[in-house]
Image 1 (cartoon, helix red, strand yellow):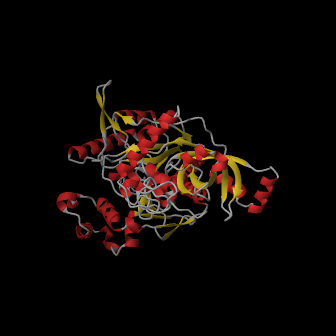
Image 2: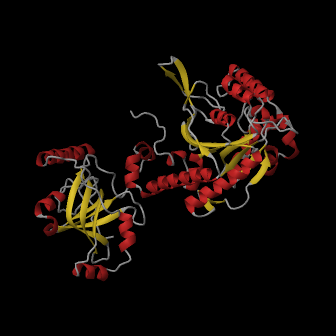
Image 3: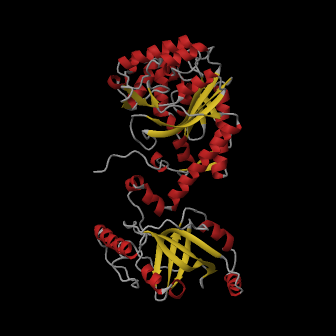
Length: 530
């Protein structure tokens, strides 16, 4: 790019327009006050301070793709022959160099591409007029600017627009972060995502990639005959997962309502109604902790197919993730936080018991409740808090798996056949009713998906709901409520059905190599300012 003297936000107002020497930092409030004075002068000078009549004909990425391959001589020849290409762009002014009779500015639009959506504009006093040129000298970094002119290359070969007109469309009242340091405070990046996006090309690319990945996922579902549906976000009874809900009150109905923790029970009602394949990309809410992998408001996709079981669901989920990764990244061998992840190979499949044996030294003691209790205590669990002695052997195995094995499942692995007692919505295995026809998919040590053959025995479901209510009465805040209407729906008859839920945010963490769930959520939950 043309060699720029960059007027950092902490100095570009304090200096005279032609001064190229950095000044000491100035208090941000002073800078804002000075910009407000400029806006006041602008309002006095023209009838409309924030014009809304400009529509750019071009975008930075498209111009770069079309003309960067041409030499300076080729473009100069076209200009000499009167065949120059006219262009108009608009965007945020990110760089500025003011000289005597000519200046440069770099505008940034939303096109990304090889230039990150940036394009250089050459502003000559004789081309735009002395008044406009003098006004331009006092514009600030962050202002929204429009430029029209013709495409050329500078002496250094920088593709640019030679402006024939330039306009200030939006006055920026608040200075951007220092060019060289950007937004250093990670919480500030989350809290003021608009600043993060305007200053960090990587952030813009990450969320663009997320959008494309979700679009490809949706297209894959439709291609496989799934019907996209929408179900309520306000539930009279929370259900579909073991989680603590957010509670609100509906004034007109004069009753408490719950933000949905999962759409599962409504989607299965649709299978009862006759839709054989349904899916929903949904927002769900759980009033629980915040961590690098948990946000109280999150996105997941749940899908259900009549005549499928949990093994069909595993097969389809594997295909779905490969498709999404291929569309988003163009490859299946990817890297996450410096470690390889291979999505091209068949995903491993093992039971909880097999996983413990494969990834720990438990050996035959995996079936010894006393050994598991002692091992869990060594890992920091207590009898008082976790009631270890009253747990069944399968429940202890699950706890030990979560504490000692889960994080070791780096490559894609399906963990199957969870205890029926902790799977209140899943169908029990016919041969071994103590385990459910259920799976969880782990990648990079994190749960990505959860699915099972759906329980379609209304009487069994009612009994399991009753057990959940008893658990809630005993102090389990995450236990399920008794949903009488869902039981009624099952009484009409749910065909054999498989279902699965995929955590979209965690999947996007994987595909964008992001260490925290907050990195892939545009506006994550944060403590209130102040």
